[in-house]
Amino acid sequence: MAGFSELIKNFSKTREYVHDFFVYGFKVRGEFNKKSSRTYDDEKRRTESWMCDHIRYDELGRGRQVSISVDCGHIQENPLYSAFRSCSFTDNDIKLHFLITDMLCGGEELSLREMTDRLNTDYCFLFDEQTVRNKLKEYVQEGIVISVKKGKTMYYRLSEDRTEDYFRDLPGLEDAVKFFSETRDIGVIGNSMLRQADLKNDIFYMKHNYIIHTLEDILIPDILEAMNDKCFLIIKTFSSETNIEKVVPMQILASLQTGRRYLAAYIPGRNRFTSRRLDKISDVKNGGRCEDYDLYKEKYDKNISKCFGVSFGNRHTSGTVSPMKISFYVDEEKESFILDRIERERRCAVLEKTGEHIYTLTADVFDPNEFMHWAKTFIGRIVNVEGGSDEVRMRYISDIIKMKKMYGGDDDEDIQ
Image (cartoon, rainbow, N blue to C red; front, side):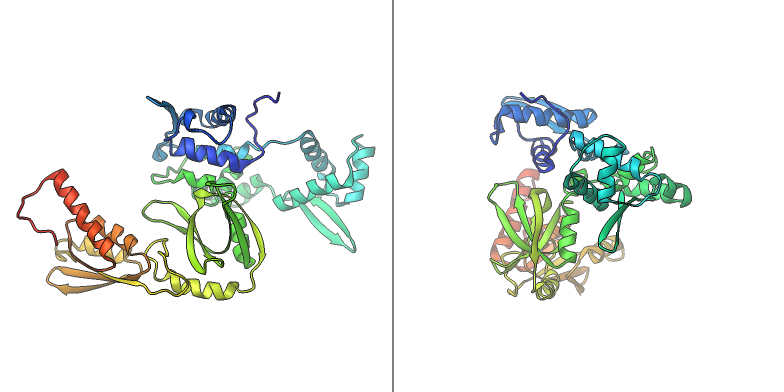
């Protein structure tokens, strides 16, 4: 029977467990029904070993609830980075790592055949050329080894780039990397650079740091590559193993309301644009060249200008938008900061003064719900809502009625 190991092969599986059971923290062991309880126990032990200082246990009637509890404003390093340092390796992986770097450390350029022969004659290890070729290809992609073609033969040499050299030769780089080690998209790269140079972020604390993004960062390079090469992208979500979709990636969006990140894409089969949450995507891969990419991108640029947030509503590539008007009461002499905020956050909406202390925002948007969600943050200042849909307006009135029941109010107060 295979023993327990903290190292993993399939990171997407670990992402799902950490995401559902530890980040959201609303499930218990009895609700884990995808595989055996032993699998859950193994994943739980791995996560506890990575994040031992940030695990919280709550005893509920339905079982023990385990979650990650982190105050981002009081930690110097995102604890989820540990998951990226847990990749397993074979005996050949570790042998070839040290043998290849030892062969090339003198600055030599060697061909695949020369390296395979030296492994046999100088180190007494017999590897076939394909195994060595695969390891060299991996190291070229990682930037550890540089490949140079001379004639018909490919030669390899060790990269001369060293993290500690850059820190020594470039003043200010160390502080810059410490800062970016806790920012999204490239944070794990910055953290790895610090570890290579035996450094830690001892300067910056991020008050509003969405550490969950770390679990999505593994998808970002493949998504950006597909965009750059104008290719289709095949995405698979956690919800179902058969839930696979072929899309044309357009842009990575971030919600200001929730902090979540989304992949904005065109779905050829449904003839519409949509956005997919990155934390719901388990895997992505290149789907081949998209000949009409520029055409879709042109349509996307027109559509995104009508999105108040990340939602395209139920519209297709060229559907009609829903016009909305929301009027606010603002005393501009005493509350100029309110106007400053509206102007700063209005996005695609147009702001104009329509009366004494009355300012109106007009927006043509695909999803009026997003516009209304933002507008409700000015609750108490909204004097009128027009347009959108009956559902949106009635939901707003319903919310006000519920709030009145919860917090009280005079019966003769009007709801506008």
